[in-house]
Length: 584
Image 1 (cartoon, rainbow, N blue to C red):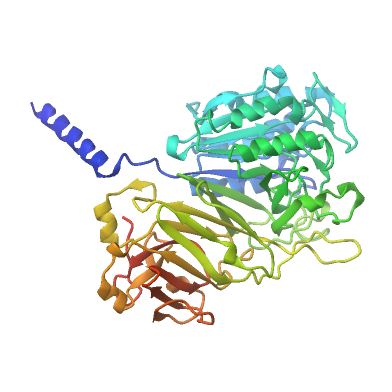
Image 2 (cartoon, rainbow, N blue to C red):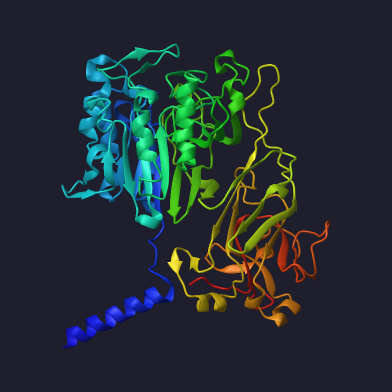
């Protein structure tokens, strides 16, 4: 009888929770991405066996473990020599991740395909990394576990591609993602040497049917999809591409590939090869599709320098690239967070940087520490994001942010004033000039409904207690690389007048709020860098200083002059000081 009563109470509680606001969605989760791992110089400390930079890998592994990622993707060039013994050493260097319950999913780069003597590295890769076909991992205690599901490879193109090109899924329905990894490198079954000097096997065009089927948003069953390959779409230092040639090669392949990404909601394409942190918007040759390319920072003793924009081997294709951010000569890694309809990427790199390459690593040839990796101190350099219900605005230097105007389920958000005042440039110089390209701001927006916060379902009654009088508007991308402070701008949002107190309006205790780092909501101007808080009862007027905020009750909007980015809503403040309204 007692068991029956307990079960009855549990059932009643579950029903009540569902009636209260629907079943709670899954928790946000993270995965990591790391760049090429090549040791290319002497090794006096005997810390980097078989051309594998274990002295760097170990430090990056610890960061992934600390961050609690579910798995790590490495974007090719796992070793410098590509020999079987080197690939085994690289697999061993990933064991600390596996022992921590974190999956490791690599793929080949050009350094894995040095010759036919080991079948271009395919048997060794498949032996060292069976998880790319099964998702099963074995820890040092010989216990097994699995990461991911629905593994697929284009084996109908060739059995050699089993676990070389592959895809898998991770996450529950509302927080799910598909990873699609593409390998076009040399195989024994198909082998072509192209003008760019590399040996290719089964091309993007050969695999496009499989790629499109795995990305198909109507059938794939995941909310998000990410695509990875070793070579960039358009690089900075290298001039070869994943389309079996230079950036002008096979435009018809490129158009189909870009369209398959854009049509299926793929926002980010990750790659390596260049040993440079670079974010760019790359447009297809026909101009109809685009994707954000993220070239991974080096995890090697090797660093590259961008080639001049007017180098003839770009074949005039650099006009298809819009540069967003760049960092050179440093070791870095990436943490992707998947949270409902939104994805955020955090880029971390060591705070020293300016490392020298190859025989000069890390600080110059002939020095006491030449060929020895220093202790790296990683700091967050930038964050960016997208939301499936948001938009991306490309704002060039000197242009207005006023193009940001959106409406979502009754809430309007607009930037009333503000200019991209950045002067930052990348290091992609013209041989005749010497100035790099001005960096463009990629301003990304998104929305969360008022009755869903942090992935948890809450009731309308508890919403009212929080004082939220609008949906939640996310805004990112208005700060320069390495800075949190954004340009000064004016953000306005509409509100539901039934959800606030007239007394709060009179006292200036109602307006635009932003989510703080601890998950609480604060007056948006309290997150500013500088400025003085000043409440205005009335519409915004051009010339109001940083820190001004107010309410235009006639138009039912609130506004604030701010210089940070984050998640915004309209709410009452819990007191005149920096009063907090919690989410939990």
